[in-house]
Structures are given as structure tokens and as C-alpha cells.
Image (cartoon, rainbow, N blue to C red; front, side, top):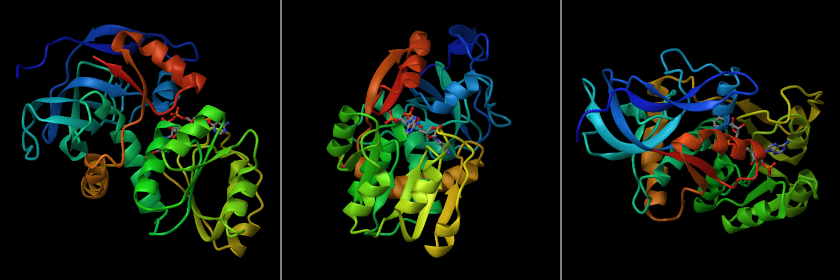
Length: 331
Ligand SMILES: NC(=O)c1ccc[n+]([C@@H]2O[C@H](COP(=O)([O-])OP(=O)(O)OC[C@H]3O[C@@H](n4cnc5c(N)ncnc54)[C@H](OP(=O)(O)O)[C@@H]3O)[C@@H](O)[C@H]2O)c1
């Protein structure tokens, strides 16, 4: 394979802030540093954090490119000094600190995974961010055990569609919330028990379905008044893990259920973790999740793909919350 074209096309944020504009520009292609691979990008996944970054409210971690994009799929074009796991031509997907909305992106080899069997090179861009996040939050933080019940809020988000599939593939009973009938149908198709949160109180729904025991683990991105309600929906020794607070960072909370039910309230972010920490999650995914994808038991759920030049339209779709699964940009 030829070396990268330099300069390369990438999306830049013309005016960071509420009314940001995403435009295609020529910027220098990255060079892989020691321990990094350079990927010729086929597709880049969109993430909620990309919108926050474009608004100027979420700077990339130190050392990461300041262009948008936290995950890609593509072909290895070059490898940096000391890379042992991949060679040029390998088809891969990768988690990045930034810089994915571009023709080339550099990634630590510790954050790279092969494209699973039966998954197209483009669709593979839908896998890294959701599976790293879901695995580390459900398994490392919430210590999900075989046979336990799970409640997943935002069931048709990129994260939600991955979490429902992982949990059902591993034999868990899954409850999951969404705002519309179509979204609830999508949850049922993935094997979850859907709760339309506009029509039903999710606390009542899970308590009724579990014989008043509640659920063992809750994966939440909503926060706000869900913080108290999650405590009510949790079983004794339940673990509640937040990956975002879309509904509010602040809440007035009665902590009595934490004591009485011996609950754990947890929260984590992925992006700022070291490559070694991410590498440990990557190794767990290779062992536990990639075989389930290879076997067709977990699939990338892609709502729609947009050409790179339409990144602004893709962001508008994400902001509208009309999507089910992941949004991708193709090069
Ligand atoms: N901590 C981490 O390491 C980490 C990593 C990755 C992602 N995240 C976060 O996880 C969240 C999901 O990411 P994503 O990329 O999968 O996002 P996404 O596909 O855009 O989904 C966002 C979801 O939020 C739901 N939602 C929005 N407002 C809501 C409200 N007021 N009440 C209940 N649900 C609401 C929407 O579903 P309805 O239409 O059904 O309401 C939608 O499914 C984002 O906030 C993202 O920043 C965190």
C-alpha cells in the first residue's frame, strides 16, 4: 500500500461554539509515533462527545489531535517503531483520542482490533467506542455476574444497542428504555424488554417484571431525576453506573436506598484513560466480545452513513435523536 497522501482531507470546526460549522479542509496527515499504527480510514463513527467538542465544551485529552473523531475503521497504511501486533494491509477498527474525521488517523496499537468476520469494513467503524464503553462499565465497574438482570437506559443509542446485544448474548434478562414505539420495537428486535419511558414509569415496569426485586445492574446515560429513580429500580446489592448525564448533572437525592439496599453508584469516562488501560479493555473485547460478533450474535447497528463532506448533516441527525444505532462518515 502507498504511503499517505499529504496533505489529507479532514473535517475542521470553522467556528467552535453553539453554531459550529463542520467543513472539509486540507491538513497534514499524521505520522505514526512509536507504538502507533496509521490507518487509511474507510469510515469514522460519530459520538455524542464530538458535538460537545465542536461546541468548544470538551477539549481532546493531552496529546490527541484537536480534529474530531474518536473511532475509525480502515486499512493499516504504516506502522510506527515497536509495533508488533499489526502490519500494513490489515483491516482493522480502532478507538482514538481524536482525529477520526479524516482520510488518515493514527492509533495506539493497544486500541486496535481486527474487523470481525461477516462485518463490512465500513460498518466496523460502529464497533470500537460502544464496545469499549459497554464492556468496561458493565464488567469492570458494575461487575455484572452471570444470571443477573440489567436495565439499560437509552436502548437505541449507539451504546444502548451494543449493551442490549452483549447482555442478551451472555444470557442476561435485559430491560431497556426508549422514547418512541419504533425505538421500543428496535429494542425488542435486539432481545430486550422495551419500556417506553414517555408512557410508562420504568421503576414500576422493572419492579413488576422482576416480582418487586428490582434489577441487579443499571447502565444510565440520563442522570438528573433518573438518579433517584434508578435507586428505586435497583435490587439489593445493585450497581448503577453512569456514562453521561444527558438529563442533568445535578439532582436532589434521598440517599436512604443506598444504605438500605447496599447499592453502588458509579460513573466513568473512557477517553482520558491511558493506552495501557484501554489496551486491557481491548484484550477483554478480543477474548469475550469479538467471538460473539464473529458468530453473528452481536452486530454493528448502523442507522445511516454520510459522506465526509456531510458531517454537519450527520451531526444534525444525531442531535435530533431520531437515529437507532450508530451514525458513520465514509471517506
Ligand atoms: N462515559 C463514557 O466513557 C462514554 C463513552 C461513550 C459514550 N458516552 C455517552 O453515552 C451517551 C450515549 O452515547 P451515544 O453515542 O450512544 O449517543 P446517541 O446514540 O446519540 O444516543 C443518545 C440517547 O439518549 C437518549 N436521550 C436523550 N435525551 C434523553 C432524555 N432526556 N431522557 C432519556 N433519554 C434521552 C436518546 O434516546 P430517546 O430518543 O429514546 O430518548 C438516545 O438514544 C452520550 O451521552 C455519550 O456522551 C459516554
